[in-house]
Length: 213
Image (cartoon, rainbow, N blue to C red; front, side, top):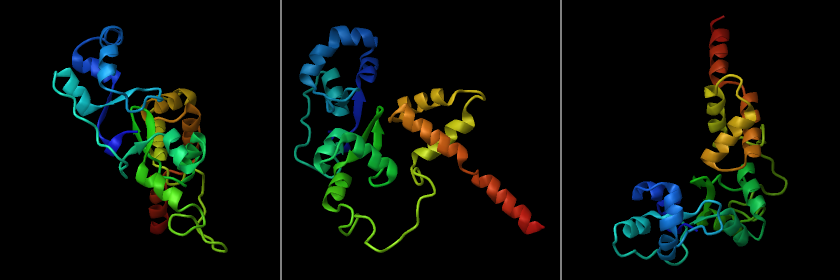
């Protein structure tokens, strides 16, 4: 958990601030640092640390304590969110893709959700009022595709338009996953969806042409 959505830093950037190669940092400096500054996401693939605590350690100042207690702005991993919702981490990620949860935010490639959003989903599950989906017997607009309104779709579309011609989709997907989090397979699906969406600029141009004729 990242308390209160505080700024964080990873070990590569810590080594850069310390002015040493990352390999040297891992071998020589990391053990002492980790004993004084705990990782905020100890079970994540990328170890993240509180920025203020890190800078205090690097400058030899007293390390400030982290805020205590739960707060709506706390950032939770999929595993932490899953524990609150009593579902699996993969279901949390699927809910975010399908629009049943906000898409969350990414810190150094790790997807996170605010405690407030997760508690909202817990307290208002589908069919129970606010935030709980449609009432029985009512119908609403259906999504034209699974990723409609997903902010990552615009990122995928931009990647498609700026990629070098002939670049394999799998290569672009892997780059997007490294930059923004998620799996390469998910980004491949987003790229496929983005490629199938009509260009709104083209649609507007065609409409203007039809209006003039």
